[in-house]
Image (cartoon, rainbow, N blue to C red; front, side):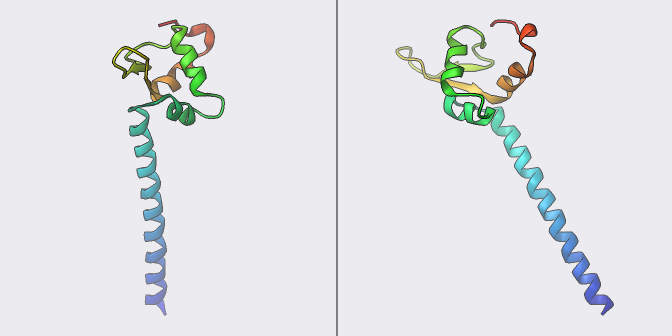
Length: 103
C-alpha cells in the first residue's frame, strides 16, 4: 500500500506542476500579445469595460496618444486604420492624468 500511496502522491504533484506550467504559459502569451499591434476593438477589449474603440479613436484624434508608441496607422493614407499597443496604453492610462503629457 505504501507504493500505491507514493504513486498517487506523485501523480497529484505532477498534475499540480502541469497546472502551474499551463498558467505560466498563458500569462507569458498574454504578455507577448500585449506587445503586438492589435485593432482598436481588440485593444479596447483587452483594456477592459471602461474602454471602447471610439474612446481610443477620440484619444488618437485629440493628440493624447503618440504615433509609433501607442498606435500606428496601417492605411494607405485615405482613411485611417489604427492599431494599438495594449501594453503602452496600459502604461499611459495607469499614469495619473495630471502627470500625462500629450503626444
